[in-house]
Length: 403
Image 1: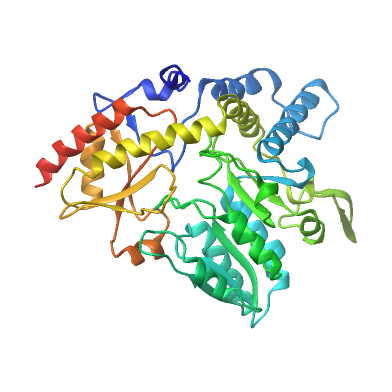
Image 2 (image 1 turned 180 degrees about the vertical axis):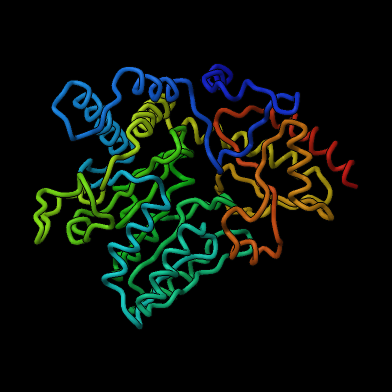
């Protein structure tokens, strides 16, 4: 695979920042977009722009075909039935859909919701809101010192009062890859419904949802080379049919009378209003692009980059890396003794280096790590070994300024 040629597919990566070549190490925040995705969105607005499912004219048919075509592409990409895939604005909306449409009507006082210490706020806050309104309680599974999930604690906490387990496929801070298929199989044996946050998994590794065996799987498009405001929720059919609509309006209905409404079949029952049509056209193009590269190749490329970065970080005195779980993804959160992460990221930016600093929407995890903030270098297949060398040179320069 000619990765230098593939890097050329991403126009933004050729720009400069503060007069320096851009090194973009923030793909866990949002992924960059290849020219094919940008062109697909541009072509939609130039040639096909119309609303979906609401017109018999040519443009309306073309828009609907492109929109539904993207749903079908995504379904094949993750190995699910197309009619079980609800298109959403992203993972946050998808998890909230489960919280309000599945959990809220079913949970009651005495029930428990099981989450893990490593969750993103999007997989914590909705469950807290549900617990407040139903009287259910939140139980937390802690981590081992290397940042992996304490599986013994997880099994011990899968008690009869646990009705739902929500966990990340891949941690956005530690890079830990959870054994979600094993966990979901164990939960299913005990009658526990599972919600998997796939935001950090889908852009970087092959994902077969049918093989995972979860009840719900949430994903976001903007981290996987697609436009912002795109994502999906996959759910088992029995859940989709039993769940009431989350938002009411157009397109999620079969018939509306003044005395009542007959709702559409899933997944459209949960897709009220005009969707982000151009964004989903872009998502379809992103799926085509990633499929052509091959997710196994992408994972191997990122693992090679991660090994290089880990090797360089190990040479830096006073630099701490958070998360050493075996087989982790190419996400490296780090801190340098005596240096505030925001200061470090700000000065790195002046050298053209884009890393994220802060708490990464994971306050409970950083509390467990014992730090107020970290820097995070998150890699993608379009990064290079040369960029890692440039990043390390910038890091050494900045560290001297902050000494």
